[in-house]
Length: 117
Image (cartoon, rainbow, N blue to C red; front, side, top):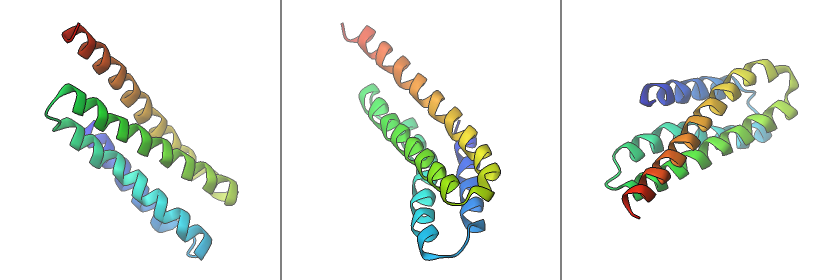
């Protein structure tokens, strides 16, 4: 998962670099760049959590950042329809990462409740 989120961040950066250079897109691009690269950074932080509760909380941040990334990708698809095909690949990977993280959160919560009856 660390490698996968790192590749995702690299792909987000490459995509952002390819976007048109105007003020409107620039604002969205900055947000996408931040949230898209944050997915991996926060996942790594979750892996270094000192407790199960901290792990769950940090994975919650990963979930939020991935969901925000999807929002910016959707917005760009509406604003620049000709790049929709490029965006689909990023959306698919982000959706998959989000599903994995949500599943991990559910499992971690279940395991936490088992260890703290």
